[in-house]
Image (tube, rainbow, N blue to C red):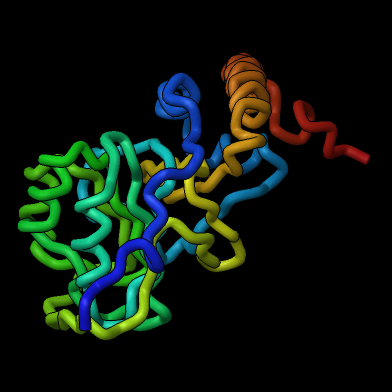
Length: 220
């Protein structure tokens, strides 16, 4: 079967503005989630595999057949510098969809990071490659390359309870991953900056001797 990318791949879609990506890198994922009205929370099972590496960038969405990583290779070929690849595996979590070779390829093409609802391998090596990887865990179980299997790139994905649209803002840090809709991202970033400033004020009040009950008005 000959792969017809025109039927399954959309690489040219509106992406979050670079200046908003830069602003997002300075903000915690928890703040972005809360300031946005508790939106964009991706499953807590998806966490950082690479230590000390945060990321932010537009979503390059990938639907992969379970136990097969050919579509991830295809996505690397069409990814633009700064993209965050976000992959749904159809619930087939326990495979090593990604490893040192693919992280090296991702670094070469300028990928900003990977978020996968599945596992990866080569965990001891991925941090050294330098591409942030967020996954459910580690698995040595090998994947296939089925050229006849159905998948797609650049279409909406359902990750947990969140619909991820291509080009949405994806941010990941030590606490987890959040997805902000591209059309709402600037408003959420503004609210996040205000929330961070308010929290600094609250910390100062706590250090001065007030209690959380007093600060938040929990005495009724």
